[in-house]
Amino acid sequence: MQHFDEAVVQANKLGLFRGASCADWTYLFTFTNNNYQQLRFKNMMEHLLYIGCAQALFSALLLMVKHPKPLANRVLSFWFFIIFIHFAVMLWVLESGNLLMNVRFARNHVLLMGPCFYLYAYVLINGAFKKNWLKHLWPFVLFFMLDVVMVALGKPLVIEKGQIFPPNAMRVVFGLFSVGVVIFYTFKAKKLINLFESEMEDSFSNQDNKLRLQWLKFLLFLFFSIYALGIGTGALNAAMEQRILLPAFFVQAGFVVLVFAFSYFSFNQPTLFTQPILPSEQWDDAKAVKPKYNKSGLKEPDVDRIATKIKQHVEDGKAYMHADFNIMRLCESIGESRHHVTEVLNNEMGSNFYGYINGYRVEAAKSMLVDKQYAHLTILGIGYDCGFNSKSSFNSVFKKMTGMTPSFYKTSAQ
Image (tube, rainbow, N blue to C red; front, side, top):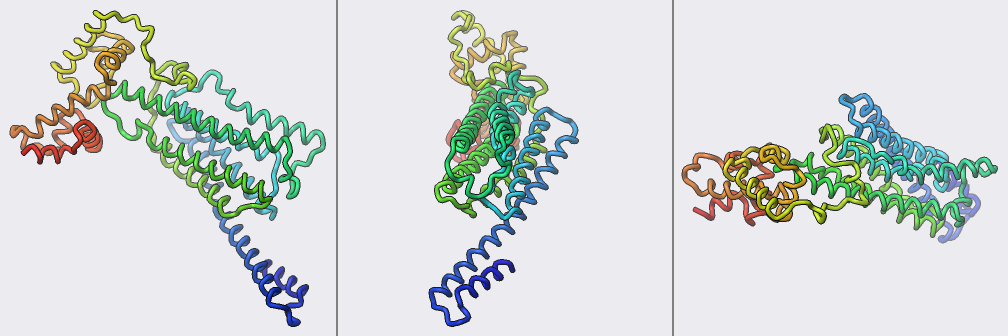
């Protein structure tokens, strides 16, 4: 009832109980309503932040004790601790009653969010850290040391209302770094996932959603959207010198959703590879482009020889009918290196491994769907016999290559 008591004090000052004007009553109503809305917001935000703290801390501890312990889970556990600190600082600010308060050191965790996402994606895909991974922490280290210097010079640890909004060099530079770090690492993670997907299409003939990391792409979009909203809200706060409450609530709600989603998907995500599928330098986003084979040592006779061996093995041996058929098995069977086989597939045959093998599967499925000899088989059974490992992959690949679903193709051919 604190907002009501404050309203009574204002009423006494205005003389509302001694025949005050209509304008005075309007002021009292507005004052009371604004305080009531702020109280409601504070209660909602407190509940949200407590949920976020509990979920982030619980997930971090669970990932630390979960077996097996892949490196990706340890990176994610560290990130969850960072998010836990973020929620805890927000709770501290909220409980202080000063929503405009800023805290040295604690604010710097924002500079770890982008690098943590990128390093988690990198380790999940490659199974190991980059040799120079510490360089991704330098923005955080820089501003942490600057805060150490500021406190050593006698500057306050807690920056209260009225000291945070007037523009100063430190705040402007920190804001620009925060925006730059989020944008930079969002695009680095996106390029990394794109390279991974391209590599998967050159390596496997079947892919499921866990292997394709569709969930990680969705969470990357959610991560960037949260920060875009936060950055926009922060800019408005600075311009208007007040806290815009509703967008701030949605930003924190977004982080809570992000923690829940990451917890769910990470616990269900199997280890992709026990060893790197590409050299570490190949995953460097500065070089994250498909090789164009400009310096290839293959001569024209070698290209024709390898192409013939690929066709003979896939067609005559019907290797495409094996759902687990991959490029390493093909290379071992024909006695050629993976690099040369991939080069011939891309340059000579105009397709990656995934598209090449599934082209044979679709052609085989088209024949079986209209052949009365296979009338006793279901459409899904035909898909499995042709080498597809799921109904969804059969339908999506078939429709992509023919423009119609398997069932429609069978009906239209009758």
